Length: 445
Image 1 (tube, rainbow, N blue to C red):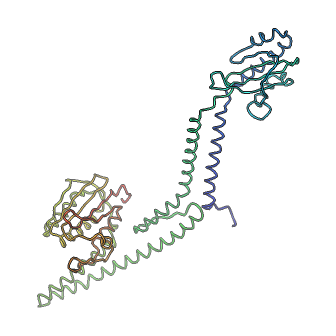
Image 2 (cartoon, rainbow, N blue to C red):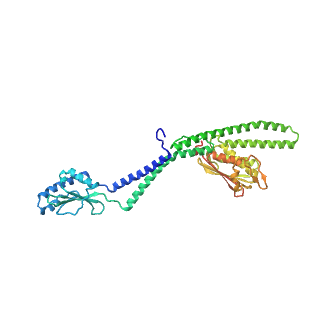
Image 3 (tube, one colour):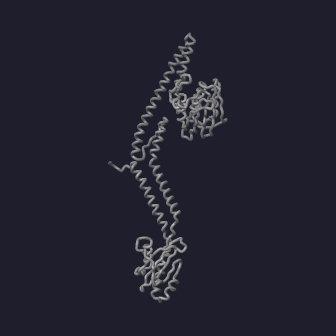
């Protein structure tokens, strides 16, 4: 590999693990330092060193019988002195650590102490909370000056406190590691969103980012996306052109059929031509799926009730249940086409249709169309949503039409960020439930 170092997925995962372990290590070190924190100030240490040097001079000049009383008179601010002929204190200041540092500070503040044997140790305070510093200084005659500094080290936390602190530390490390992982997988998440948008026939811009493996995948996907979008656009334009060109010969055939003397033949040909036009209109509506229309803020309740009234005028036994007004940003023409498709299906196969509307202004709506027709068996519902699929009705009678009604509705609903569900109505027929969000919430506007 030439050029600058490229951070791949493996290297980045390794970096996340290394950082997590490093954070855990640093946290444990900091926790240990906090547990073993020193409470004696520099000023207090200086005064203790000077007082100890004075005690050594006073004890050396005083009689042995007077030394203990003279030493106790030197006590100050939690630092006590005494004289003993012998001592059992064990020295722990020879090894690197807190005691070794204290020994260095004492001899630094009082250089005269460096030529004498000094022992330092730590004992629990009388209250049992903190820890005191105890020490001895050997005099020339072999006796010792003992001293005690109260609250030298902080009290070690209890077992429960230690466990809680370690749990908090682990939780913090996990949160930081998860944030790093989230940043790592961000480009994959963006790529997944772009793939989903492409599947919905939307052009989503893909920016290669992240590890070089992900960038390679993103670059290849961007090229594939461009090819797919170009192919879909070409196919759509070709289908629109063919559908448009078919209307002219259809009109000529309708004019010629009108000149026929045979009334039955004239009506039969007119019916076939009308069916061809419906097929063309259904195909164009399916291809466009309402995406050629911008969302608008409309009264959905008025639009649905108008569609219901128009269906009733055409002879359908249809009822409407919903609020008097419900404002939402949607594509009104696409929504009206969806309702017309569902109501037309109901008029063909059922004797009674029920339409209900529920929702919240500027948030979402739910439209349900129910009928008492034969319905669609659960096993056939997924096939009914496929384009150009015509199911057979009871008795082996095949449905006439392009087979695009439900497929168009589902495609249009999904293009607007909604969902469509097929079910069984209470009267035994088909129930179609459509949920549409506000276009401004989903960014469709």
